[in-house]
Length: 430
Image (cartoon, rainbow, N blue to C red; front, side, top):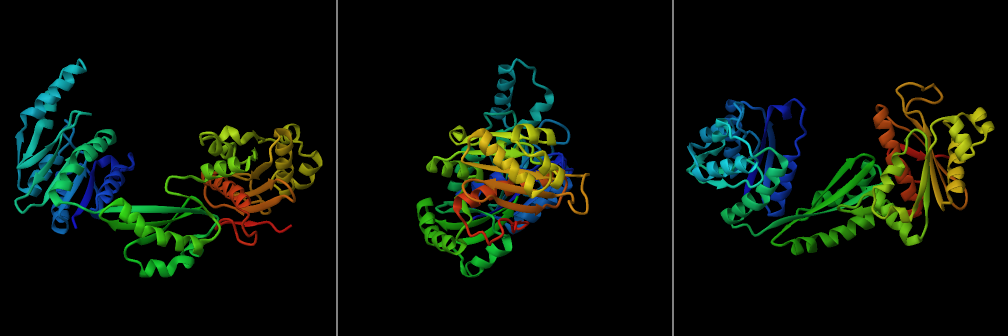
C-alpha cells in the first residue's frame, strides 16, 4: 500500500492569516484511491526548514505532496528546497514557459521576468500542467524511486491539478487498485461520552471497516471507513456495521454523509405536510436562517419573528405584559408565550422560541450569561428546555441555534423525553 505525507507551505498559514483547506482536500482525494496518509505538516517560507521537513517525510513515506510556494516572488522557494531534498536539478522547461507567456498574452498583460522562475522545474521529474494559472506543478523523482509532488497553493488551481493530473499519475505509479470509502452517520442530542459508550466495543475490535466518533458544534458523528478494491465492495463491508451502529444508537440519528440537521427537519416536515415558525430573541434569526438555507424550505417554513425588545414581544407575538413584568424576558413563561404567539400569528403547526442572555453583559446570579430558554409549541403541552452555554456571545448564539434545531428534531422523532437532548441542555421539569 502506498504511503504519502502532505506538506502545506506558507508563513501565512503559521501566522493564522490563512486557514489550511488544501491538506484536507488532498487527503480526501488520496483516500479515494486507497493511499495511506501518514502525516500532515505546515511549514513557513523557509527553504532550510522545508528541506529538512521533506527529507524527514521521505524517510517515513513513499512520497510527499506539497502545496504552495510556486509563485514568482522572492519568497517562493519550494522548488529550491525540493531540489535539494531529492537530489534533482532545476532546469527551464520551455513548454511551461511558453504556456505562461501565452496566458499573459491572452490577458493582455506584460509578463514579468520573475514569472520565468515558475518554468524552472526539477529534473528528473514529471510536469503537471496548470491550465488554471501560471504556476505549473511537478513531481521531482529521487534516485531511489521516492518523490515530492509540488502543486500551487491557490485552491482552485490545486484542486484541478490534483484530480486531473496528479491522481492519474499516482494510480499508474503505484498500480493502485484500492479505495477508502467512508459513511458518516450524523447524530444530535446524544453526548459524545454516551455515544462512545454505546459503540466502544466496535471501536476496539473492528479493523476493516474502522469507526471513529467525531464531536462538533453540538452534534456527534460516527464515521465508518472501509478499504476495498472498489467503492461498491467497500460499501458492502460498511453496510452490516452501519446496521449494528444504528441499532445501538437508537434515537438521535438525523442523516448520513452530506445531510444537515436543517435539511433533515425540512424533509420530515414535508413528508408530514406540517409547517413551522420561529420566534427568536437571543438567536437573532439564526434558526430561521438555517431552515431557509435548505432548497424547498418555503413548503414548510411559514416565517419567523425576531423579537429582541419587550415591546416587539408584546406587539408581534402577543406576550402578555404581565408575563414580562412577573418573570422577565428571559424566562420559561416568556419563551412559551413567544412560541404560542408565533404559531398563532403565522399559522404554523409547530413553533419554537428562544430567549436568553447572550452576553458579554446583562447576566445576573439568577440569570447568568449563557442562559437560554427554549419552548416548542405544537399540539398538546409545550415542550420547554433550559440551557446554560459556555463561551463568548458568538458561541452562545451558535450553540443555542444548534440546540433549537435539536429540540425540533427531537420533537419530530418522538424521542424519549427523559434523555438530555444535548450534552449541555436538559429538558425543563414543569
